[in-house]
Amino acid sequence: MSTFGGIDALVNNASALSLEPIGQLPLKRFDLMLDVNARGTFLMTSAVLPHLHRSDNPHVLTLSPPLNLDPYWLGAHGRH
Image (cartoon, rainbow, N blue to C red; front, side, top):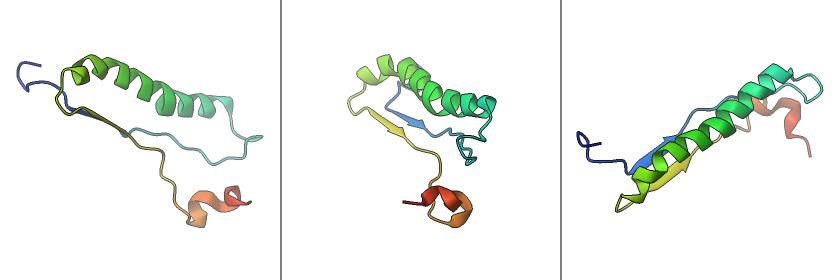
């Protein structure tokens, strides 16, 4: 930290997304999404938190997988 002076912000930008219906989604792919989207965010935030506490203006930005209303992304999953 002495080289750069600390950490002021964390951007959790990694994500994994699969659009298979729940009955067709392989468990291995679900585990990957859970590991990347939830566990990865938790681990990175936990690791950086002590440094953010020392910052005058700390921020954590967490992005979700790309959500686009284009049928390519939502297809049949956007039904009401």
